[in-house]
Length: 412
Image 1: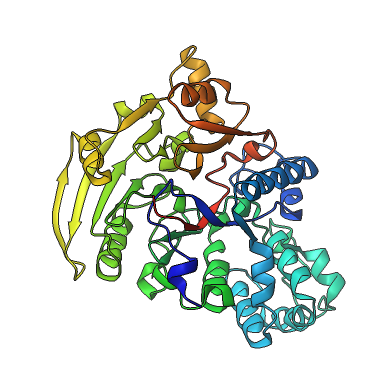
Image 2: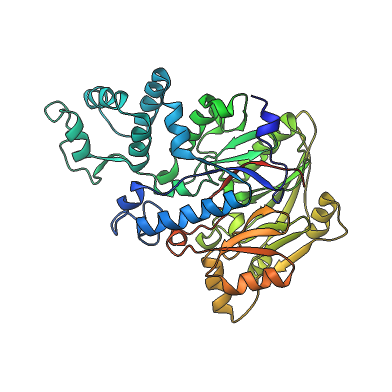
């Protein structure tokens, strides 16, 4: 497969041609009052309604001419090859505390399961009872018998519908995320298997996240990465992305792609702005929306690299809007401040992802319809807004950009 014709992202606003989504599944019903903090949720979702909303999201994308790929289907296709399936299962077990006898009995059952069913089960997790129901190991495994504070032998990954974070397409390659919190730490493993073994991804270069020293405790999540041009990108230094990882990504990109400059956006390490794209996203060729209180805390650093991946310059930029305008080929950028109503109302819309827009083409974005003020501000600034009804999806603290992983955009 010619990767350049199928997987290419050099902008945030080029017409979106291909995207990866994950439709919420049984893993959402694993959330309880007792475990939702550990699993990074503030509330419990109604699965059936969340699925309806997600189906509408996918249909909106298709209506815009975007091909939608589903994560669980890609994972299932990878597991059609028995040797790959066995290797993946063994790698998954390394994340869990399964003893040898239990692992041997359980893997035998998983190897015989239909691929799509297995993919959905792995994402939803396995309780001890569910494992005991499929393999008789209670007389051999203490792990499956005792109460040790968790009902799960394979933990669910309910955050998976936020596909932006565990991987991101940059240039003609992919950055595999390294997740900050344990609840999401297994997600990049699945993405690595899809990238390395799915036929649609043949020849796709992993730009970060494949080398032994590029895994956790390195930290980077896709919500912090914005691809500006063929030569520059912005990366948030945040609760979820570490400065040392930003430098490593800059080194890798500069030696393997045309990107030679990184703008590091230092934002508060707070949940309300866990990623850069919760407070700052690109909505047109020359326009960004921003949550205004961010400007009180924001510091921007410019990192330049040579073609060998050597950092040649590091400097703080006070006039960063002018710098980015130059990168984009404009005299200035439009910084659309998501102001309106009272201070509490502004904060409330930000909490519900008012800034987390997904551009499907230059000047055309998808947002949640509940953020009435944010949508009006965007329209007043010449941005076409497609409104998605997403009260259940939004309970997970992520918007349309969070839920989508672009694979291919046309040039701007």
